[in-house]
Image: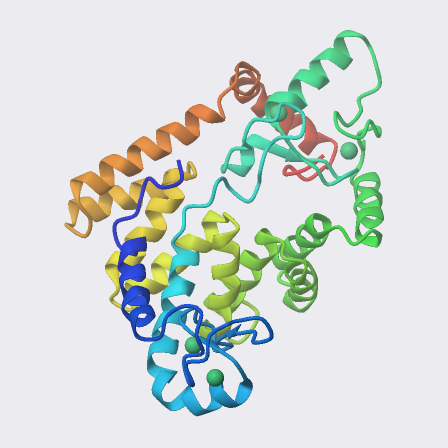
Length: 331
Ligand SMILES: [Zn+2]
Ligand SMILES: [Zn+2]
Ligand SMILES: [Zn+2]
Ligand SMILES: [Zn+2]
């Protein structure tokens, strides 16, 4: 799937800039004094964030700064974009730990186990439940084998245990609970903790709060780095916001790149956006066709008989959870 979409920030576009500069200085000589890297002379790469030049000393870097600053900044931006617009291998959700198939982007198709905070696909979840009820066994988590909670109190107790173990999934879950109750200060606290651990979902939630100014002061500049980090980690929600941001800035092509990446991860909403972009003439027919293929490939990869079966059973299970007073997203 990776490599399907490279229409705008192509490697060779970036390489051409590098080559022209390399010709000036060469890779293994100090860009300032021209000394070569031999024996006791070690060159270090420019610490301005580019990968264009090397220096023999801080003094040489300082001397060269005035001349190099413009190219350095430009290259830093290019490298940053390259990272952001690279197709992630899969979504931030990864694979179901039981069947090892990619977890669907649609969160309703999997279950977060409160006991271990593992996200299990509904296929594996229901197959296990069916087996246990057939054998008249106590219902347990298919991953860690802890008994499933009967009441919300028990579920909360499990979550608290995971929080003590500093589980970012539990932290993000708590953040969401508080955000739903409009307790944004507490939500922010949990999101920040989990985002600091690099958890893509928390990074998205945090970025979204700042981007929309929900319960915090609206701060787009602050939001973007969180959203970018989440997007690089394969979080499609973050990328949808980034696409929206690019669109508002009048950078349609960048917006389209974001949603194409999402479509390749199996995000249906983004595929619809690509379609609309094609109809409006923002992207080409080839872009749309490639996104459609990418989307279909992602969907095919995550299909299984157990998962299809679970889709049929799901409404009944949700009803059961509600009756027991359990929230619907987890067990
Ligand atoms: Zn030098
Ligand atoms: Zn530089
Ligand atoms: Zn599974
Ligand atoms: Zn468990």
